[in-house]
Length: 132
Image (spheres, rainbow, N blue to C red):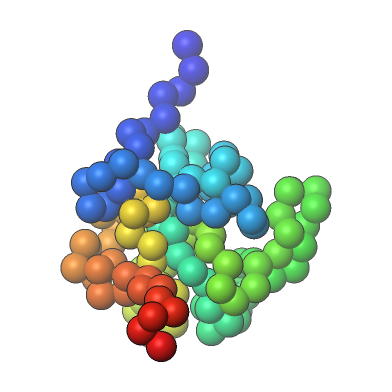
């Protein structure tokens, strides 16, 4: 009997959608911001990382830029989507450097750390070619 994964619901109450397959993200490296007990960091917020956030994370001791092949980690660049720890995203928000959030791909567990209205205020809005 294995440890049960948490449900696949997003912060909007719908089905959890994949965050990124390139780079391959998620605590389980399955493209989704799913979690379970041993994921102490709660990697549940799907964010579109910015250089500002990557630099901040590095300054806090979490290097998300340097590739680490032994961890199946290719390193991130601005614009990549990545499952972030809810507490780190909140910390970045308080510091004024929180990256945009992909709500449909952010696990409902994020609401235990970050209020929905804060996440919604940072919702990623892709630029549509017809609106340029």
